[in-house]
Image 1 (cartoon, rainbow, N blue to C red):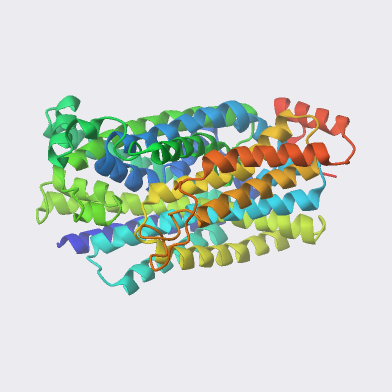
Image 2: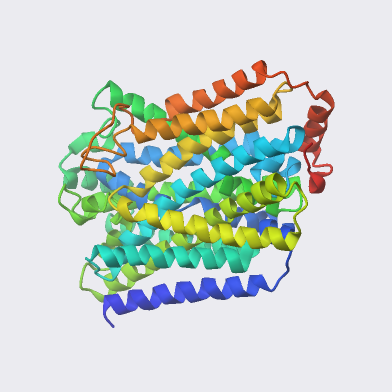
Length: 533
């Protein structure tokens, strides 16, 4: 059996497995609670598996290992940022959010504020963050299938992205949260198993001596000790050092504002289960990110990562699959073909699970926040709400597909870092203020979300990411903002706009409403009936 046939067979097996799970889940119940929150029927362990499955995206598996392979120590900073971010999520928002909301981030924000402006802002932010994140997953899918099926044609790569888009819409429209959660649990098991296997095989190549692996990586790249020390990617000048600080802020603060992670806390029945799920997620994610060290430095030690190599040409996205082929016996060998196909199928499952979670989140926000509350003023039936969520999934999937096709050359971990910057700039300030500041009000929430969101998007548009030699648009250059990640400016801007909006508003303080929210967030009392005024 050729490696292409084997890969195609494994891809089809992964797709059939996830499709089967989705059909099974679709028969387990109906209604909005089932569609948005899986009937709140998942245990802390199950939700922890699903959270880690949602979080360990193609950006982690393909993007970070690629960045380590290309940039050494500086690439590993992504792993550290993504992991530390979980402590912020655990300490600041996980339990409080689960206790004080129902289905979406906006439920919690709108509880003590005017419904329509706050829900409109929150839904807008949710959709923008989700589309940025979806872009990264689609780019990963295109790169993977191009490698495995030896596709050179840009048209076929684009077709791959379209197929992934169709699959993700199917998972959401048919399976809802229950189907999506089980797909993510299966994906977490596959990803951890595949990563452990490759990690053990790479370490075996170097006698289980990590120091020897690092030495081999620094020698093979020709960069010597510089490869193992800070500064290779971000130490060139003051601007790049500030860019690194900006990236770190976005990574560490972004998780606590990611809508597709936040809504996972609504799928568990109790606050204790929410805490348990975060602890399980931290354990799994921490173990995984430690293994990205071995994958990244292993790729640097065993593969060609020079400027014209296949790894560099893919922006580092193909480092893990090519490393799997190398430890299996190299190109052309049976072992190499089997491992390449296996790891690529795991990566494909990763992409499918994450895009399903993202699409469900944004579709839920459009249906629950915009349609049911803003347009229908709470008069929509459950059946209509779920129908609108399914239509929204089609539209959002279509937008993500169209935007992903020109973004094929960008590293996916880098694209995800932009999504984190948007989440930390727009969502986090409003969530933190709402939970901990008594004077916070409707204008503050709206200004925090739109102020952080627009600041972030404008700076990204005028950064080297969008235009210039390295950007999405290579034929022109309108960049004047020097940083690739805008977090260092846009995150404080979100907090500043939120404060400014709150203190300049003449809206009367609702002392009683804040006290209710405080009690609810700390105890979970009445969380099934969270409504605004």
